[in-house]
Image (tube, rainbow, N blue to C red; front, top):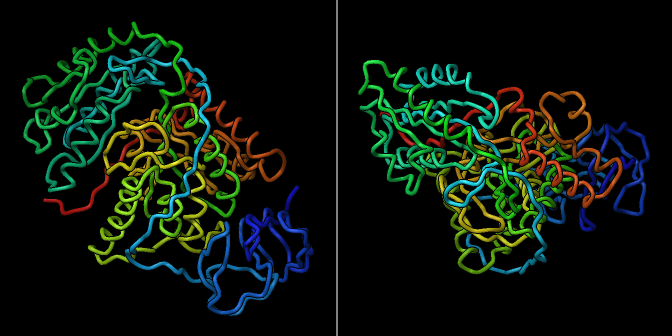
Length: 495
């Protein structure tokens, strides 16, 4: 088993794959040397491979992740006590295309639900979507009552509550309308009841135009103030939806119909070595088969953004990526907030030192495919290949945005663990075997074994097969636990 790894030949640090004790002499995987560790090094943390002078860049993944704030001796711990970020505000960038190319391969197949517009769902669920937080409790009561219909082709009943839909302004109001419209037309929903109050800003008649084409036999609407007994009226509509859903069957579908969201949270020092590269390999496999993947959490691209920019399929895509990055920095600046208030305490405890360190590990999830499109927040995927999506790093907000963009499933890597799930199956991928063992009630797939045995292609194919099993109906831990929620991005004032 490897114990200390140098990720890139240019790196000035190596990463501990287990907790190391001062005085140990450890062979360095990726370098033909052994290194005496001069301090205790926690698992996932960095150790200097050479003397690093104050002000000198720290190199990891082949790129600077910050600069030394003091002299660091060979064998010493490299972390927040002796490293600072090199990042600053908005930049002027230049396009240096790398022209990545993946060879197309024949798609594989899964059994899914074909919708009226040709899109495919991997679930056939009944969703209750409130237009405003005022009717959340009614939506929950409808969900409880509709559970009696579970079975056969009716795979789940879920009310997606939220606090918005009224007292919002400008972009916040638009975001809510678009997100709710996207969920009302999501292919994983075989039936949708959109539940309004009747006096809210984002009422049913306001949201309908955002939905564009939808199947009126699959999406029903109810305004609670229009009925003496809104619960009775809602259950009548639920019955109509269930009768349609009972006739739905899974049929063979090409993997080119899959859209998969890519997200990480609670990362550690192994995330960029195991889980995220495994997701990246999966992404390349799916893109090669004609499918689509979506990378988001823009603030966690800061420091690795030029890699994504230069992978743009053309200069127009490059320009959109530049705006994606600089617009998010401008959003922080407009609120007087520091652009680089990251990583989180949990990230730092796991071995991530700066935002550059986090970003270079985070973007491993994108694999090596060209960037085919860049989407605004609440945008929907229209282009096959790797898409970038504007959303913050917050786990539930970003995962909700991925699902609203059309992802039927979200792959979520983690080194610390988290139980949550978004409105679609949320596959938790552990970066280390200890987490997978301790939190088997949260974790679906262990990528931590990659540092113990096997190769990245083997692990990537294993993940691809697992995702196909989920697409065929296998439940993820968040589904088994009943953990599915949504969160809409809020940027402005509340009236």
